[in-house]
Every structure is written in structure tokens, then in C-alpha cells.
Amino acid sequence: MKTKRGFIDYSLDKRATLLALFRGVVDACDADPYLMRAAKHHGEKTGRKCPVCKKDSLVELRYTFGDQLGQYSGRIKNGDELLEMESEFGEFSVYVVEVCRDCSWNHLCATYLLGDGRERKAPRKTRTLEDEDFASLK
Image 1: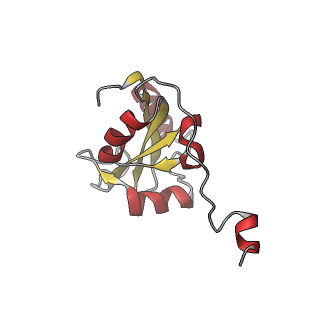
Image 2: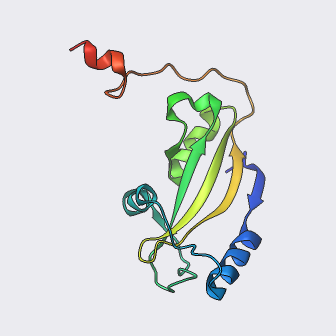
């Protein structure tokens, strides 16, 4: 990705969490059910093993957030979608989360900014079934 900037790696925090987990101080294998469902359906397999259970079920999720994304902020995107988005939007954040589908280990791996840097308005809000006024039209 050409416009990746502001990269923050959370490896040291991950290491500290794993040390605390193995000492019995914290319980880090506590993924939210929604996160587990997202990992099952949208997770991209990594080449790494889970640091807790040592199985090959570790996946990554990339969440996107930003004012310019409008109602699409907070969605999970794959690598190809991020490549398209970096030329369509001025600036948005990407949060990379790793999740083990077996033992529920989850941790924030990295964050970074993408986008071409030009200020844009958020896309027009498309009405969905979740909108109150949409349901009353039928």
C-alpha cells in the first residue's frame, strides 16, 4: 500500500499480555462473540500459529474507521478492498486484530492510516432496514 503512514506495532504489548497470561495474572482468551463470528466469516488466515494454543487457526481482521467513510466506518475489509479505498478516501484508520478461532485469543496487532490525503465529504447515507424512517415507508 502506497499511502500507509503512522504505523504503530503492538508487538511489545502482545508480549507483555502473553507473559501475564502464562503467569496466570490475566485471562486474555476472552474474545467477544461478535469478534469470533467476524473471525469465522471474514478472517484472513495468517502464516503464524496461535501464541496460546499453538494451532493453525489464527486469522487477521482489518477494521476501517474514519469520518470520510461515513456509515461505512467500522467495517471489516480485506487487502484488495483496502488497496481500492486508499485512492477513494482522503484518510482513514485501519486496525489489524488477530483472533484464534479455537481458543478465543485476540489482540490488536497494528494500526495505520491510509488514504491519499485529500479532504472529502462522507458518502451520502444510504437508507437501510435499520433506519426508523425506512421501515415506516412500507
